[in-house]
Structures are given as C-alpha cells and as structure tokens.
Image (cartoon, rainbow, N blue to C red):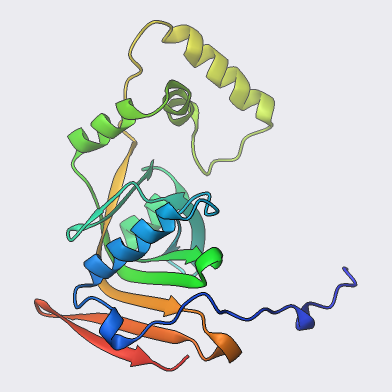
Amino acid sequence: MPNRDYHSERREYNFASLDRDQIDTNPFEQFTKWMTFAHQETEIKDPTAMSVTTVDAEGQPHSRVVLLKEFSSSGFVFYTNYNSAKAHELANNAKAALLFFWPELDRQIRIEGTISKIDPEKSKAYFHSRPRGSQLAALISEQSEVVTDRATLEQRLQQAETTYQDQEIPAPSNWGGYQLKANLFEFWQGRPNRLHDRFRYLKEGEDWQIDRLCP
C-alpha cells in the first residue's frame, strides 16, 4: 500500500464565484456559457469529456467517461456500441446521469434525465464523419466482451482494413447515438474553505425551479 498521506491533499478553490444574478434562467443557456468558456481555456484537453452513469438490474451503478458530441434543448448526445454494458443497462433502466468536471475552472456540472436512442440515419451520418481508423475499430470491437489479448483485436483490425480497402466502411447496426433528455441540472463552482456555490435547476412542467444548495 502507498505511504502517501492523502488526508493532507487539498487546495483552495479561488477561480470564480457563482451568484443567483449571474446564472441564466434557462439551464441549457447556462450550460452553453460554461462549455464555451471551457473550450476557450487551452489548458483543458477534453472539455466535452463527461462521466455517464447507468444502473444495472441489480441496482449497481456503473460509470465511464465518453465524449459529448451534440447538445441542445432537446438533449445531450453521445455515441456507443448498442451491445455494450451501458446499452444493456439503459435497456433495463433509461434513467442516467452525466457529470462534467473541469478542475482548471473549479467547476462541475451534473445532469440527470432519461436516455433514448437517436435516429439511425443520424447515427450513420456521424459514423461516416469519423476518422477511418475509428470507424474500423467500432466495426470490429465487441465492446465489453472478454478478449484473449490485444493481438486478437489488432488482427481483427488488420482483416477489416484489408476487406474494406478503398471501400466505404458500413456503419454497424449495433452502433449509434443516445440522447439524454434532462430533468435536473446542478452547476457547482468551487469556493474557498469548501463553502462552494451550488445551483440546482429542477424541471417542473415547462419551467425550471432554481435553488441554491448548501455545499
């Protein structure tokens, strides 16, 4: 076990504050403001990276990081294999949560809602916009299944490269997009002495109830 004392690991959060008169009444507009700002910060390598948490049939939550590919008032879109573990979990329970964390800004955003598949034609269009290597990897990978070794994956990839040389790679029927329709947002701004600023948007009919939460 490591000898490092993790109890003493801490830093102060001094980047910014967040007050009620600073936030938008529309959570999607507030999200856009923060995402745009995160994109402008060159130190943030992957501002669209988000944790997606799903729950299996036994009530066990599972989290993984994926990239946000599109967002609007309709929802938040990401792409994956429809035979993956997360896909099986979503088929059983469509409720899920997203988490964006930008330590460079002392900020995080939580989003909760329900997830559904997007239009297959939209998934195909995005698939063909990806780099060719990424298309081939999606085609040959049986995501979340046990594989003997990496050499097996590389052999499959080489075979696919040969098969589809100078050809369009077909979009797999078991690969596509999901969209989370949000019913809750929480915007968190780290503050000194752990007295953080937190604002929750809760969907009520066509409106959003906004509340400040204790840190």
